[in-house]
Image 1 (tube, rainbow, N blue to C red):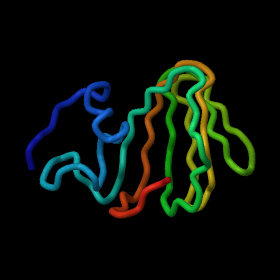
Image 2 (image 1 turned 180 degrees about the vertical axis):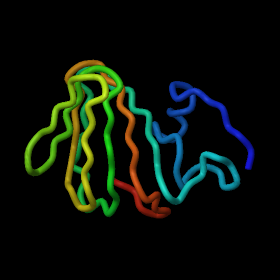
Image 3 (image 1 turned 45 degrees about the vertical axis):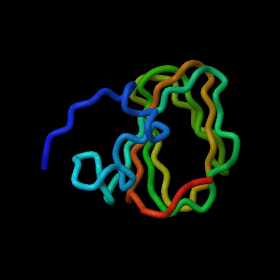
Amino acid sequence: MPVYFGNAHRDAPAERGWLLGHFQPPGTPLHSTDVEVKWGVHPAGDRRADWATGDPRTAMLLLISGTFTLELRSGPVTLAHEGDYVVWGPGEDHTWHAATDAVVLTVRWPSLPGWKLP
């Protein structure tokens, strides 16, 4: 398999921030059905319009910079220090918002072809 070298700021917009997953071209190092990786750059006040519901995957959200809140049905989790992270399992409804300019890395598994959040 070839090696891929890229830049998250340049590459992320092509797939709404997702750098790695089933949706990338087969035969490239970016294609995976095991895991998805997203580089999220969010200006202050940015928020997910709707709740993500019924997601059958596990996810981890890692704060690179800024302040970012993940809203879960059980309550909010605010990531405010570089390196803060949260992990949630299948079926955990969620939404989010950026209190300040924020950069986050999301890892989600498995990568399921044909399954997409609204």
